[in-house]
Length: 114
Length: 112
Image (cartoon, each protein chain N blue to C red):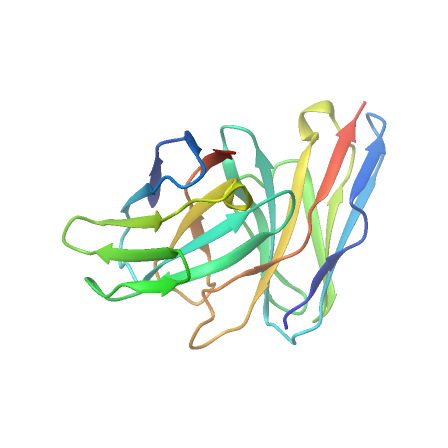
């Protein structure tokens, strides 16, 4: 079974703090994704990566950066957290080739920025 | 810009009812449509549909794609309280980056 884990289930931070969210997958997947999920807005793609050290902006990259130094790990960084970044953050991974469109999700990190 | 629209946005039914959730899409170069179920945490994969008219089935859940109408439905028969969840529809339009475009989801509540 594919397993995607996220470093924290719940996180409370203060405005202006630097926040790191980590995601690890154990299926040797090439592709990894970071989404945020907000009521009424659905899942929105922040950044994704299709290889180590490679990254591409998604639909809402402003205020975020990412790092992928190892294939299994994809980090989302909030350089200076703001209250409008309070949200549920979901990480996902997928393979390339046949069936690669199926993404497998981690349990999510619920971030509250005060 | 690719677009996926789900309806209804929310639905409340009683146990035993049958429900139909809808997903329509406007994408360039459609390749496949996926359904996910999200309870309290991670979305879990249900179905992937690529061919029109072929029903995919898993227990009480079934789904079918209509490429002519650019839509898909997800049916749940004899609903149970454990079916309460957000159901997400996503479309893959090809490309080497394997991005999915998600709809906003349908919140299904099944009351006992």
